[in-house]
Length: 232
Image 1 (cartoon, rainbow, N blue to C red):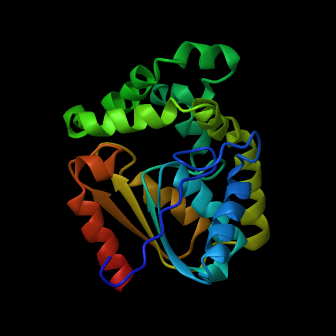
Image 2: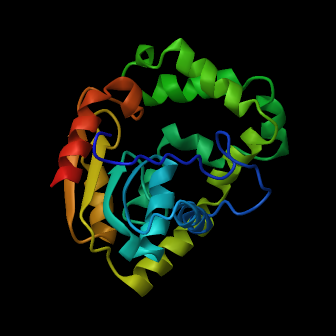
């Protein structure tokens, strides 16, 4: 932070961003982020992403490769890329297909219960996701339309897979340096394997003693790894 301007946008339909009814393909959300850069008059940037941010990040870098100087990708797959079809078979990822009006009725008023499952099952140590964090996100996802839009992120995965394969076929592999970090108790070394399908210059790394929620479980390790990579 001492020598970087840090911009942290909430994705479409998430956090405190607007909740439009459509536009949840990651290709379109890549345009959203390019628009944020335009509005802030940022021509080029280093990019650091996690989870669904990785998917938006690939769409951004594939559509605007000259605007991203380095990309750090943390612990989540890319639809349609590498072992995506095998990844989808994991019983831990049942939530990818959990959506629709009845599912929204089930979760309404029970957002905390639904979200606790993510923290408890996808972490190496659920106690690392503290009560304040759990309350914070439960409150955000209880906002009108927020859970619906979260489900829309998953609903777009089939189109995202088509879009990603088309962008890779038309634009080829990314040329900027990429750091692919997998959590030790989550995607691990597979993160770099996935990124090598879409990028030429990939350095792999492992965040130790962590499940998927790296910044809650072991924040110093990813901060150190990211800082060293960006300083190179």
